[in-house]
Image (cartoon, rainbow, N blue to C red; front, side, top):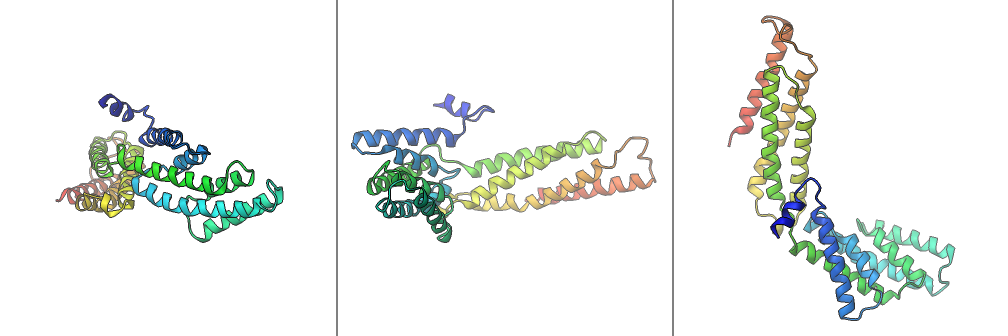
Length: 271
């Protein structure tokens, strides 16, 4: 199992969500075969659409999609009774489906809801069985995301924070030696850390175990952004050793930014 985890963490990784989606689909097909459920494609599509980047995202998405499935099934059942596969009614039904998903603020539910409506309108499945299978697919996706290698954003935050600290110190060292500064790398490091913090905060409370430590790290992001601004200011100076003569205006401005960066770094290092 360790070789699989190492492969998934490599640069050519499939990604945890991709693997978990495949597992969820397999379970859906197995369940439909074992319990002799008709129309398993509803289950498979629902599982694929529900698998989120985080457990909390899957739960919220699953809740919205369940309501969306009901909306699509009800509208599909009502219009297919009037005229199956009618072009005009298909358009009207999609408009109603999308509007209701928007009205009830069902984020992420519109696509699955429209799929259920369309499948029923073209008689690819019955409303009740299609809705039930969608519910099963949604639940399977949530359970798989919860059980199979759940994302550890607290660990990702620590890792991205350590990487950012190393990049900041290297860039400051390059600035001190009048060498090329990797502005893009520092900016990407800040964005990555910021993203991981947002994903951690977005999770439900019971999924968060490191609130105090994450809070301390998140408070330092703004300081690192200020350090990045100082690095940008130094980068645009087009410095050379000859230009940095003591007493010159450029020398004064350069050391102002270097001193400010040093003070910011000392501040962010405080426990």
